[in-house]
Structure formats: C-alpha cells, structure tokens
Length: 370
Image (cartoon, rainbow, N blue to C red; front, side):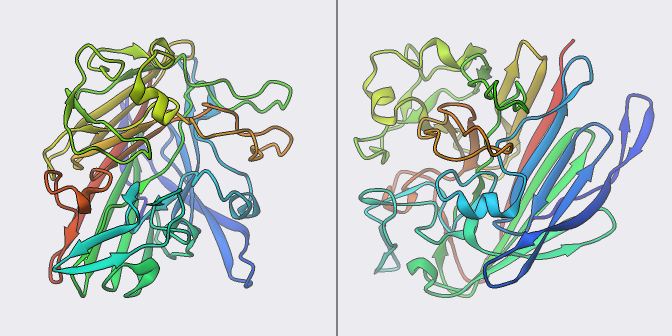
C-alpha cells in the first residue's frame, strides 16, 4: 500500500504530512517488519508491510481529543496470532467469497482451497493478508508491492499489485494498481474495522459496540445471500427493508429484526450496489453522535460490503492484551467488486486481462461535527 503525504490546507494554515518508521517485529523466518506512521496534523495513521495492513488510525472528536478508531494490535505478533479477523489487511487475490472456491475463466476451471465452509474467503487459506509486501518508503509516502505467482492459491497468472495510501487534510486515500501476465480475476479491498467511539484503553471498560453509530449508504439495491452467504444473483431493492440506509439510520435500530437475510449473516454482511465502476462516488457516511466523529467513504468500486462484526467472538485479544475483540465492536466498509462475481454473469466483471492495468481508489475522510 502506498500512503502519499503532501502539503495540505487545514483551516487557514498549511500542514505537512510527515512519515516516520520504526521496527515492528519479525516474521517467524526472521524477516524484519517496520511500522510506518503518517500524520497530517489532523489524524494519524499507521501501516505495515505484513498484509499491507492499516494498524491504527487516531482521529479527533468534537473537542479535538484523539482516539483509536480502528481495531487492531500493537505488535506484529498480535497480527500473526490473529487468524480470524483480517484486521486492517488488504485481502485478495479475491476479497469476499467465491462459491465452492471454484470459477471458470476462458473455458478453464480453477479451484481455490476452501477456508469458509463450502466457500473460499478473501483469497483462500493463505491470502494477501498473510504475505510480506515489499515496502518502498519515500520522504512522505510508502508503497507496498506484492508479486503473487501463477497458481498462488489456485489463481491463474502472475499478478503484480501495489497499494498506495495517502494522507491529506483528514483523508486517508487508498490507490490500488495491478497487472498480470495471464488473464485472471482480481478483487482487492482493505478489511479495516472502524469504531468511531474510540477503542477503550481500559480493559475494565471494553470497546463499545457499533450499534449506536448512524450509517448512510446511498444505494437503492443490495445483493441478497443464500444460507452459505453467497449472493443469489438478485439485485434487490432496499426500500421497506432493514437494508435501507439511504437516510441516516442507527445500525442497531433494525439489526435484530425477524428478517431471513439478517438471520443468515447474523446481522449485516452484504454488498450494496453502486453499479458504476471507475467513477469516484460517495458509498458511505458513518457518524458517532456521542463523540461527533464522522467518516465518509468515496470509491471507484461498483460495490461496498457493510459487515457489522457479527463473527467477532471475543477470542482475539485487543491492543491491551487483557480484553478481547468483542461481538460487533467494529464494522467494515469494504469497497470492492461484488461477492462471487466470477460465477455471476449479471455482476460487474472482475477479470483482469494480460496487458491491462487495474486502477482503484477509495477515500476515507475523518472529521468531527460540533
């Protein structure tokens, strides 16, 4: 991933985005891993090459007080031990689910190892989240690059992927670029968990849930799922359902309704349909009324998976090591192609052909309302 730092205007004063780094630990094979911290005078974001991972974002509330607003760990070992949450990582080669781990491309069938019941999730058992990416820091930026060889987790073609993260005036920008030497499928996204209340630093007071957050998703359709969380292929209307977030709505308001879709996912774990790929548009606005913190998301991707942390089960330690990542203590807003797109002819294509270049941009903008 690449985080771009630049001079930005904040109020009437210019601020400069800075980059610092320090050792973050070592992989089991001894490979050293650094942590890179970007600051623009408004927010502070930290990333590491293990999984091209966003490890921390500290954002101010309406009084200016900074707090940690993404779930994660304070050490590399914490992420190595966490094999459940994908916290902050770039997931791929295909983020989200592929039914039965199987798809066909150009008349050939490919099989991805299963790691989510009968399906392949986030690229299979050893996805991009578990890879050490090459880090290229500059004066105010870091680029993470990964080469995924032909046959990696069953996917065809050698894929070269870079993730560029930039920070400017409260906006954390993610730019993906990918090329391949053979036709393949690509669907990458960042799996950060947000909680704008701020992560508790006191193990006696666990991080609150995200149910008191107001969410807006300006999409009129979503993709319903079957019992194994695979899209049915329908583009259903959100109107008059618990999936209508076209106006600001408390996440907890309807999450417990007697609704088959909510029951299947244990809450929200669905893709909202924006349809147009390549054009930057608003995909979500998240607000925590008590603190005033606001997160807006813009993306060039055709879909966004809203996941309400339904499978966080309290078995993964938090940053303090004493408490655990609790049920629904974080949510994901994953801008991406549609789940199971290789097997759904009516969904936007996720095929990347040899000689083509994939470009994708997502903006996460943090602010506070008085």
